[in-house]
Image (cartoon, rainbow, N blue to C red; front, side):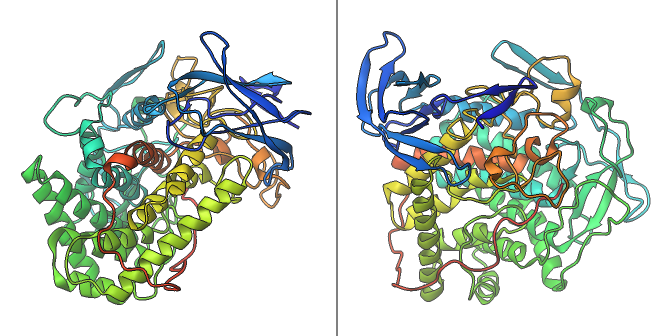
Length: 573
């Protein structure tokens, strides 16, 4: 117990677990440790001076690991500096406290997305390492499964540890960068990223988002629908992207991919308007054409990919994607027909606790709730507001009650991304009622991802204490650099061990992670996890100053509740 793989070797860790990067000044701060004594102290790194002494709560049984642990709360410590936690049996990794304690993680997270760019050469540096790949996948992709000839699809982001590009997940992923910009504009406009476009007249967050948006514009068919994905027939070997020479194919349209693309492009149209009117207009024209196709094709359409072995990304019914498309189209255009259709469809919908690309409903409901346009149904708005408050309160309680601060006991492919994405639910609820525990909850999820977990390790490559060394990520495996590409959030522990049969289930799923490159089950990376992490980092840093609270939300007691179609669902890989 307490064993984990570091550099491929089993090591024991009974030390003090903390967020090994940092805690924001005004947010909750906790550490977790094994000990016979509850006493602890917080000490400055530069002189070992004790600045905070306390008695930890416990011992408590950890929900997801069965360990008996003490929880040390040092929220009252607000002085900026670099510290460690000392107990009678050990000390923690170093961490910072301050207003920008997590700024380096945000820069690295966005650096991770930049490294996923397709069709162009990429060069980046992190710590003492340099990472690069050449321009890749420059040949036109074949239309043989949907028509004759071939077509350019260069650009966008590689989706995950493989080199496929998927419209559902790509649109869903870029939405979280765009929502970060929309919800926190003052912070986002000033955010400086390490990307080639830095310093131009467009905010860096929008520059990186445009990479994926330009690709979405390329994969729309003449009738307005969007391709489901562009991939080879099989996953690539562990090679650098420029060495992947497989023929790539456009895979036929789906109603879900079309609706997701419409949602992302309609959202982009209003955000880019002040910076690039021509691009904003292109996004809106494409989204309008896609929405017209959806209006003319009301039945769900699945892609034809039975002979394609890359990620399926088929998430079942398309109603959640359709309401997201309508919400963004209405918010951008003010077209009352979109609002009428949207309200008819969402009459019984409520926010979901957990959500990922198969369920875009929370994006739709949040846009509807936060809109400043006139004409919404007050009862629907009130019920949606209450459903977000109910979800947020439940998540906050779960995070507070869990030894490691994780707001869900669920583990599945990519659940680390869902943990980061809880921030979106909390921020939507914070807009209705600005409770500090919602922001504390975001900090706690980040703490968990950055070392306050069973392993005492960060789940983000190149960041924090003993980060993953062997992610399931082709460039990290194929290049000649010892360390993996930085800023990539791995999927995290799963209900089963990677080496066990598919029907096996671990008693304590939090203890299943192994840091090995073949382990796609726990150790893959994906763009929708990185953008969720970016949103959480922007939100927790900016919310106190930049969030705009609801001026006229009317919440009726007992209205709403959580509903509208399930949690995160399965992942596409």
